[in-house]
Image 1: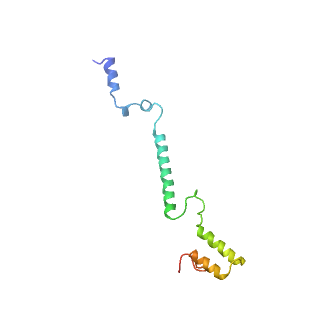
Image 2 (image 1 turned 30 degrees about the horizontal axis):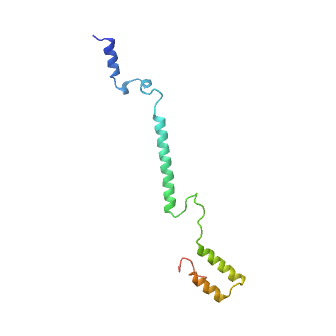
Image 3 (image 1 turned 60 degrees about the horizontal axis):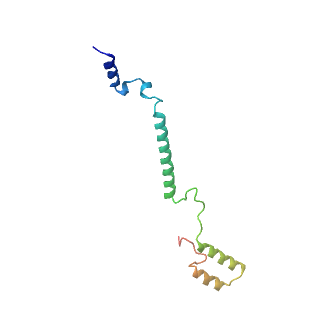
Length: 112
C-alpha cells in the first residue's frame, strides 16, 4: 500500500537528471555563463600569446612607446654638430671621439 508520504519520499529520492528541465534549473541553464567564461579565458590566453610572441621577436609592447637612445649617441651627435659648425678642429674631434670609444665613419655593429 502506497501512501502519500511514501510517494513523496520516492519522488524526493528521484535523481535530479530524471526530473523535468524546469525543476533542474530554476533560473535557466548555466551553460551560457560557462561559455562566456571559456570565451574570456581564451581571449586572455590569446592576448598573453600575442605579448609573448612580440616580446621574443624583439619588438616592444604597443604601450611602451619608442626606445630611448643611450646618452653616448646624444654625445656623439653633439660632437659631430660642433665639428660641422667649425667650433672644434679635426684633432679635437678625433680626441673627443676616442674618449667616447667612437670611430667616426665606422659601422655601429662592427665590420660586416
